[in-house]
Image (cartoon, rainbow, N blue to C red; front, side, top):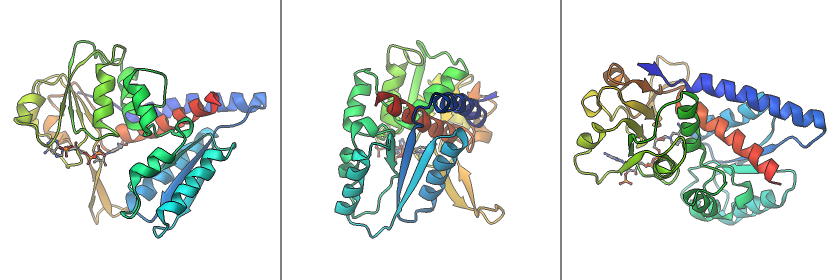
Amino acid sequence: MQILDGKETSRLIKQEITEEIAALREKGAKVPHLVAVLVGNNGASITYVDAKVAACEKVGMKSTLVKLSDTISEDELLQKVKELNEDDDVDGFIVQLPLPKHINEKKVTEAIAPAKDVDGFHPWNIGKMMLNLPTFLPATPYGILQLIERYNIETTGKHCVVVGRSSIVGSPIANLMSRNSYPGNSTVTLTHSRTVNLAEITRTADILIVALGKPEFITGDMVKEGVVIVDVGITRKPDKSKKSGYKLYGDVNFEQVKDKAAFITPVPGGVGPMTIVSLLKNTILAAKGK
Ligand code: NDP
């Protein structure tokens, strides 16, 4: 079994991005600027946004964190989005999800200018992705593709089973893995909570991409020998022995599958860091697009 090391791979990609930004600076060109909007005090969201801002700093990219109270109205948030759309200094921005219940996430996502939508969640960008046109790929699927590519994982003709059909992970990665390109050209089965006999299907997977948000859901008997496993899930469970007060769990029971898998992403240190570098790459693309 070989680890698909997202931490190390993302470090290498960050190095490349650092060089690219240093070259822009030397030329006197504008340094790409990412803005992250955080609404409220959701612990996981704060951790994710802090990690994104820290990654920008590390590569020399400009970043701004906009913190808004969870009592902000939908109209006020939409006004903030409009300001960011119109601010020429901002190349790309994200509004960290989930949003408080009184705010319609769909409305906010659709209000972001597609050219600044570096999360790749806007329907225009999703549509372009489906048509295989150049666009911002959603950060997590993009991160998975880069990890597969850097490890030269063969995808052509392979049976790729995706567990979970969310619009930010499962559905787009299923589409991307079936595209006529590399990584891609896989025969994809997209599964979800209504799938019957899931284990029978996952056992036929050459590549298994799991994003359902249920800790250690995929067990040893659900995979075949030689499978490549990408575990997207991140669930926090309270754990007093940890400094942070919680432990992170993936959707795959690592101990049970590790001796069968040819490659596997760990949690943490797998898909998570790759998601962050994809956001940085999308921001550079947004700046170039201007
Ligand atoms: P969602 O909750 O939006 O979607 C979960 C999907 O899993 C749904 O399609 C659901 O099916 C499916 N599902 C639920 N139960 C089952 C089941 N028993 N069998 C088969 N399918 C099932 O999740 P997300 O895609 O947003 O996130 C999934 C996980 O990935 C979470 O742990 C999240 O924290 C993590 N994540 C990690 C990221 C990273 O950077 N590493 C980035 C984004 C997410 P149905 O549609 O029928 O309800």
